[in-house]
Image 1 (cartoon, rainbow, N blue to C red):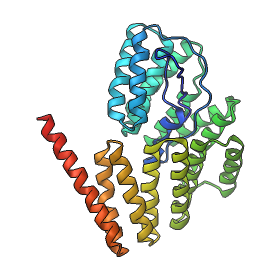
Image 2: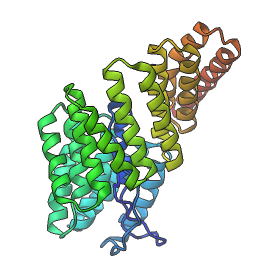
Image 3: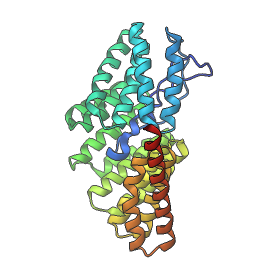
Image 4: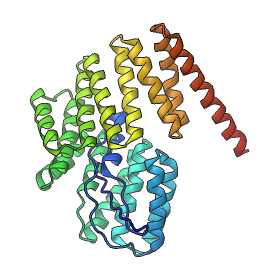
Length: 324
């Protein structure tokens, strides 16, 4: 999701979450798209505090700390609105929308994206990334026609192969949701992805392929695709997306009757999410991981899963105690 990564060496430069990360909401709902292009040179924000806050927010987002990033991006957006700075409002509304979408709040995300688009137009900036994320949010809200229309708008107007590919992936997900995705369409997307050759986009293509196979109840094929998706997210350095792809692979392996592979992927997903500070997400994978390990008669793996559960439980208890 080239949530354009508008960073530079200067702390006060304007920042946007990389679109490949923002769109990669896709883990639960197959959202997520592209990788990061070379950061363009942009002007400093009108209020220097916006740049300072955005740097901290972007670091939190990169660590998978979405709630913390949300709070920081909301602060940056308040500063931008106070200054009536169109470009900064667009960036920060977009960033906060990406966080809301990752937190499964697509309605809130769409309201912010409407503001981001308006301010992008007011500041004569390209709104392609806003349209792509809005298409994702529309799909999450159960608005497939609107999602497809937004994707078509990008595909028809953008000269960038990466943006066009992202739009085609969104449109293909909409078609797959309705059971209308054709193998030829998936093949064409794979060919374009080879030309673009970005790790995060490759991950999104594998996610699409896995989702299509899963719909056809070809769970082994789906699991293998989700494994490849996880590896691509890892190469791209998007570790939350990697962990969620591992969890999808684990569920698909379990549906295919491969309990050992299921336990392995679910355990690794839980371990990664916990290390990123997402105890809740980790705990959601513990029970199915343990069930799969026991089904596969993998006592050593089951012991490691239980040990991870105890570590998470102690961490949560310590956190609750510290908050009192």
